[in-house]
Length: 447
Image (tube, rainbow, N blue to C red; front, side, top):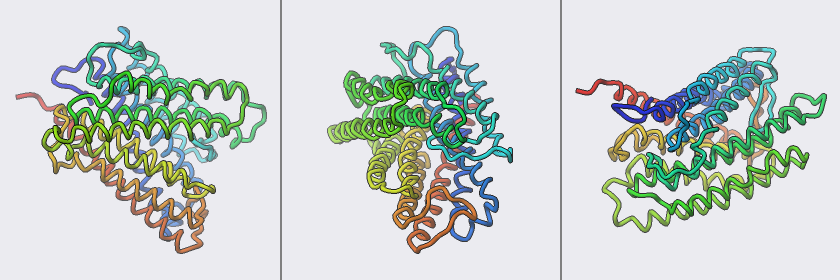
């Protein structure tokens, strides 16, 4: 899945391989998502998941593929497109180890003795194979980020200058998350029960991974809008200042763990560290579009780049609203994070589609234009369904015979959620088809 033709440089090759890992993971995760979403429709739960334990294992593998692998591998791919790579490439080794890690933790799905642990941010299967796989993958991505690309460079690149600080900050946030995981592992109290063990292990670093995802998403917005406007969106210095403000809370992660401060510190860091800065980015992007509306190229607002940005930004705002409505531990919580992570995914999907099409602006009525909206719309409907069910009192994370629908509101919400899951899956399949088509077209010999 190389980014340029006919001759591909090593950076593009490395990026393409990371993108392949990311796309492969989202393909498998999407299959699990459709299965699990349909299995929550009232009347189908016991038919599709007669054993709740298998449903839990499937959910845990799905979450780690759709969040950990998809987001991290895609960010690593974008990072490879930054200038200033080291002369001796270690990325190919990191990619082989990352794939081995993914295969290892995914195989734990079929280990009946692997107890599902409903830990937040990184749900786990209590088995050595899962821990080996997830640890190997995380360390491999971190190895790819330990590169001179972390330092600013004046060399021209395919990533616009205002988006580059976001990718560097995302890499640093990821490294801070890995350090926080390491600090938690090194200071684990003895004889913790599995839930308490994994909750403490993954809580802090899991929060920091959300910062890394958001930083990469915002960098994706700036990349997409640069294709719409025909220039960079922001002054690179202003972008670097805002990205640094978004990164700063992450640097305290290992200290919070080593000082044994309250886990609530991470919640507050994420609550107040993401919303303000991202809101400023959205306002600046909208301002840039308004100022340029008279000079935009024909069809610019009917392009994959614009639709991808608008879908992702709109979902981000909706995610903020749903998050502010959370009061209890019900399905409003997954409604919030499905909207939020859907925003990141929509931005990443559009970014890859634009990278695979050098002109950047797809035909106005092509599938590539509408794919981000179909996926994002389905994900948004799914999130709203979760929210409706949550307001009606639906329990969070219940599968198979564990799910008990007690009211009309829960039934309506969960049914809407299932419908949204199907629509999002259609968008996901369209994305995979477009990526496959682009890859096959690039494999064709030139005439």
